[in-house]
Image (cartoon, rainbow, N blue to C red; front, side, top):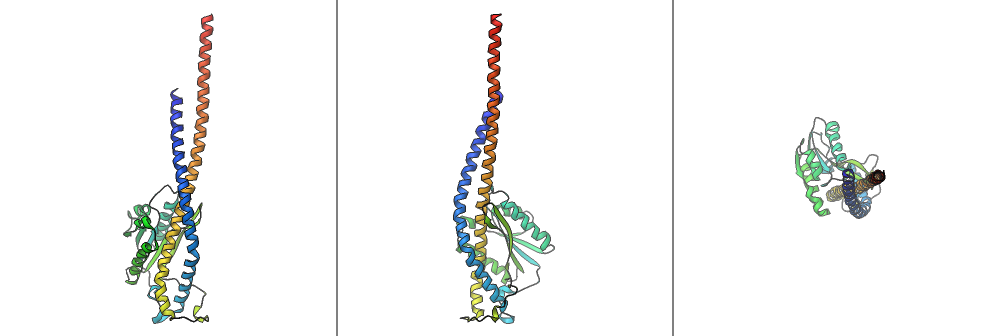
Length: 286
């Protein structure tokens, strides 16, 4: 009977866990739907704006070149690592940690690499081995363009005042609920688009190209960072929904297996009791 009691306790525990993971899955699914609509609507605008400004910046040379496009010898690198404040999202956070580790161990080996972290999970890991000049995890409390723009302005200032020669963003790019790609994007300096010659196209610029570039580049950079955060936000809920779906399925399988074991043990116990009763009755008759 002790075995039956243990099985009943395990069945209750697994059923409770299954209810929790199922509820978390439904919550993440609801949040994912909203986040997916936001990033899907934003991507075309963000990508086209970035492409246009990269082309315009490439056409400006010499004294007219934008300060945000200044190419320097890379000695000091600032990595903006974007993850999550919470776990239970599969490999979502660990993939970002692996991505930034590959950057400072391979691509930027021997250079000064500092971090701006957005997400408590990546901050907890990176802060143990590298300098984190700012932790902006609180932006998830109110993920708006205004709040993200303030972070982008700080990053732009770090580049223009010469504190860092290159700034890159590492984040999970949303593909679908079950798939996210770890993406590394160069934030500053602006990367010219290869093979495009905007200067030779028959466009009329009003005001001048120089003024357009200087006014729109900050907006483009803010939009780029906001898009990365929106991508990461949607990826987080997609990863958590998938993880909780798998956890619910595993809990269901375990519960069913435990119930089968319980029924077998209960049947064996009942059979033994019947045999004992029959054996006792036969002993009395004899």
